[in-house]
Image (tube, rainbow, N blue to C red; front, side, top):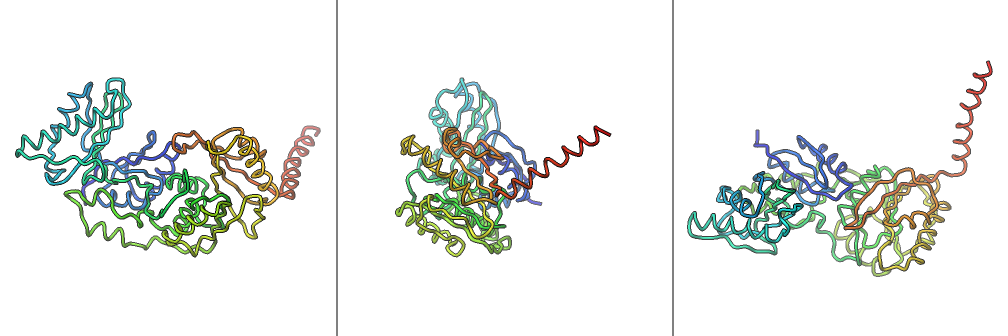
Length: 399
C-alpha cells in the first residue's frame, strides 16, 4: 500500500461542493469542504490524478508542515527546521507564493522573503551552497498560507494554475476562466445526455469544456507540464500510466453549438476547438442571439453573456431584454442557465428562475440562474393538476 498524505485542492468560491464531488468520484479519502478549497488525502497516484483529472481545481497543494507563528521571525525558525534536502535539490530553482489573512502579518511579500531566507540559510549551513530563487517557472514552487497565526507550508504540485489547460491558442478580451466554465456545466447536471447550446460563446470555453465533460476526457491531457514532474521523488512510470489511460473516455452522440456575433471571436473559437481536438462535437456559427431559433432537439443552454464595464448600461439592459424574449419564444420545453453580475440585468430577462447559485467570476460576485422554460401546454397542465387536489379537499370538508 503506497503512503497516504494530506492534500488541498484550491478552487473558486461557489465551486467547493462540485470539486468535493469530483474528488470523491476520483477515489480521494477524507474529503472535507473549506472556503475556496477542499482538503483530502491520497497517495502519489491520487496527487497526479487530481492534477490531471479535476475540472474545478485551480491547484493541488501538498502540505509539508502546519505550525503557529505570531511574527515573521517565528515563521523563519519553523521553516528552517524542515529537512529541506529531502524536498529540494541544491541545483533546482524555487519560488515562494504567500497568501496571508492576518493582522500580525501585513505583507505577503515580506512573509515570502522570510520563507525564502530560511530555506537558503538552511542549505548554506548544511553544505555552504544555496539553491537559486527564480520567480518565473521555478523548478519547485512553495506556498505559505497564513490565517491569523495558523500557518501551512505546502509544496505546489501544479505549478501554473490548472485553469490553463493548454488548448487555448488565443483569447478574446476577458475570456471565461476554464475552471469556472467547467464548474458551470457540472452545476447544471449536464453530462452529455442532450445537445448543449452557448449562444454567446466568445472564444469557445464553454463548448470546449462541455465536449471534454461529455467525452470524459481529462482536462490535463493538453498540459505540457505539472510542477510535480520536477520533484525529487517524481515517478515517471506512474504518471505515464495515468496520462495514457483513456479507459474512462466515452462516446458522445449529441452536439454542442457555439454561436457568437463577433467574427474575431468566432475565428479564435475555431482555433481553440481544433487545438482541443473536439471539432467533430462542436458546431460553431457566426450568429447574433437576436436570430436564435428553436432547436430541433431537446437542448440545454449554458451561457455567460457580457456584463462588464465595456458596454453601456442601456445597451446591456437591452441585451438582457432580448435574451429573455428569445428564451420565451425560441427555447420552450428546455432549460437555460445564465451567469451574470447585475440584478438589473436579470430583471430584464423577466423570467422567474428555478435556481440561483452565487459564483465568483474573478473578483465579481455573480449569480448563476436556472430558467425552466415550459411551453404553454405544460403551464395549462400544471394549472389543472394544481387545482384538482384543491377541489378534493373542499369536498372532503363538506362531507
